[in-house]
Amino acid sequence: MNIVLTGMMGTGKTVVGRRLAQELNMKYISTDEMIEKDVGMAIPKIFQRRGEAYFRDVETKAVQCVAMLDNFVIDTGGGVVQRSENMEELERNGVIICLTASAEVILSRTSKTDYR
Image (cartoon, rainbow, N blue to C red):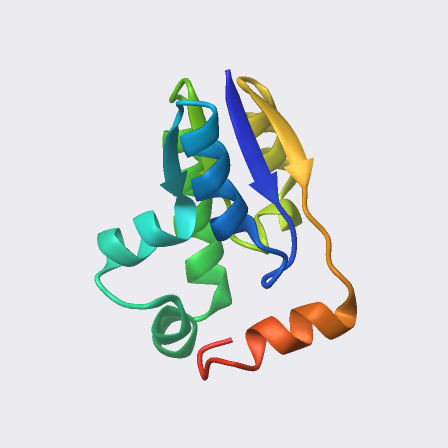
């Protein structure tokens, strides 16, 4: 069984995911990190050079891979929920938790970098 973290960018999925995995003695994986490694470029560059449709297709393939894992905390990208097939895949072997934060907190967290 996996724990799957969803939510908008800036809600703390990565920080919470790493900590949760450590506390529960589970492994941690990020679909965004997988995508960047597989494609060979950062997500903003993927959007810029290949477009959102390409990114979402690659994201769905990453979801299919991580959904087969067991005993993982899975940190998903903010848009993973846009495709119901992604959510259905993740629900098969996972408990989905949606993290939230106020608009002010998200703005504060995401404005500190130039890639969000």
